[in-house]
Image 1: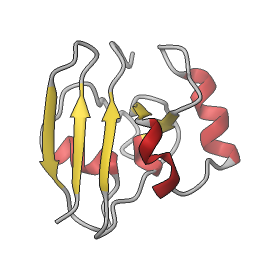
Image 2: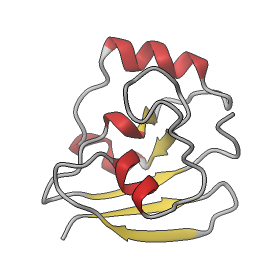
Image 3: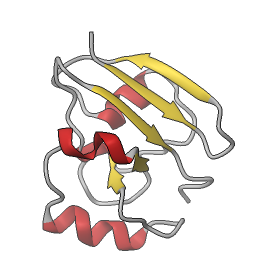
Image 4: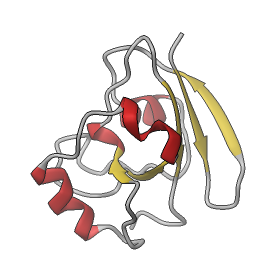
Length: 106
């Protein structure tokens, strides 16, 4: 079963079973994971589902596209090399992803 491990800015971890075909953002919202606001519902028109992907997991994700790259400049917490919008991260059957949420999204 696919899983996503969410770590908050203080280091608390929560492992969530995910559904293939959903996004990491949908997984977080469905499971009440704090730190993911998702104001736009995944339509790539905000940056309130910003996460930091563990470096070891970046290779299993699709590449950053131009629109997501542009939206990451609007995050509340400064973007990093491993910043992604969780609405753009698809869950697959093989997903075992580790992400950290920033201190604030808004």
